[in-house]
Length: 348
Image 1 (tube, helix red, strand yellow):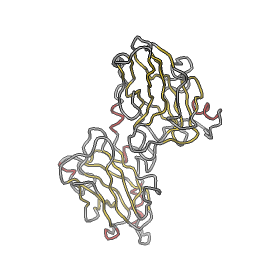
Image 2: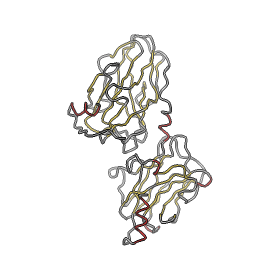
Image 3: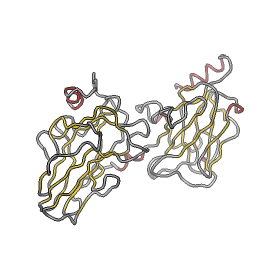
C-alpha cells in the first residue's frame, strides 16, 4: 500500500496499523497549467512543443494540514509523452517517485517526501509535481484516476490516509471534457475553527487565545462563540475581531456552561475562501472547548445557540485544534463542585 511503499524506501516514515481518517478530510486534487492558479486547460497548445502541466492539491486543513505523499493515476489522453521525467522537487527537494510515474496507467504513480509539506496559507495551493509533456496532438484530457496501490489517496503528517476528490482534470489542445468528482466543490464548504499550531509566528495560549474561523464556501456567519471555563470577564483583555464585528462585554451563561462571543454588526458574511481571526488574552491555562457559528436574524447576538448553523460537535472525526475543539482558558479559582459541571460540559 502507499504508506508501506513509502516505508520501503526508508523516507523516515513509520506506518503501523489500519488507515484512519487523517488531518485533511476535504483535500482536493486538480491539474493546472499554472502552479499558483486554477488554469485547468491549454486549448491553444501547439503540437511539437513542451507544455508544463502541474498536479496540485488544495483545501488542506489550515496550519494543521500537510502531506508526505500521494497515490493516483495521471492518465494523459492527449498525444505526446513525458519529456524526460516528472519534477517532484516542487513538492519537496528530496521527494521521490516510489512507484510508476505520470501516464503509467498500469502501476499508477506514488510519490513520497521525507517530511511533512504544508501550504503557506489556509486553503493554499500545494503543487506536488511538474510534468513536462511533449505535446504532439491531438488534444485530449489529462485525468486524475484511482491508483491500483491505494486509490486516490494522500498521506498526512501523522502518516494517516486521506482520500481526495478531484476538483478538475486537465486538458491540452481543447477544454476539459471530463468533469471532476460530483460534489467536490462541496468539500470546500466545511466550516472550521482552528487554533493550532502555537509558537513561532503564532502566539501561544496562554496568554493569547486565537481562532481562525470560516463558515465554509458560500455560507453565512454572523456570530462566533467559544465555550470557556473561566467565567470572570475581567480576565479577558486585548480582544481582536474582524472589521465590523464586536465582542460581547460579558460572559454568557447557558445552563452550567460559559461562553465568550463575537458578532457581526454590518450584516455581512465572512469570506468564502480563507479565514478570519478572533482572539483575546487570558492568563489562565488552556483546556479543549467547543465552539459554535451562528447566522441569520438570531445570529447577531451573544447567544451561542440562537441561529446556530455549525458547531464543533459536527466534526468529531477532525483533530482537536484543527477543526474540532479549540483551546479556551480554564478558571483560575479552586475547583469546586460547580466547576466540575463546567468541565463535564466541555466533553458532552
